[in-house]
Image (tube, rainbow, N blue to C red; front, side, top):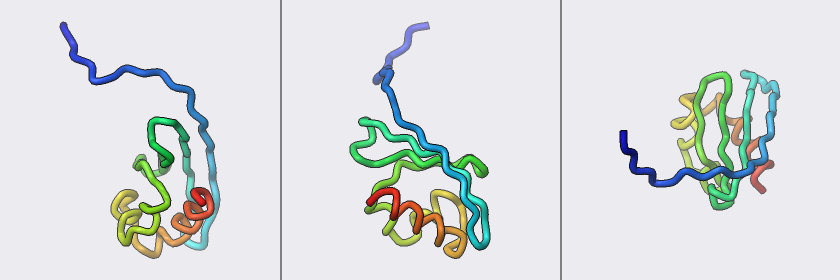
Length: 88
């Protein structure tokens, strides 16, 4: 079978695993830093199997984290606070 690759790169990444308990939820995250994301990071929610490439502007976008991680506004308050600290 012939394949047409758009790219097939291997790159070293820095991965950070973070778990913290908030007032309402426990957060288990894997955060990957790579040159491919142009200053943003790949944030994976390990519990819910959802992920997004996030930068400081995305954290401040109303409703963005709620949509990406399929959580309520109240459930993302502590996640948003953590990501602000991480990305600034």
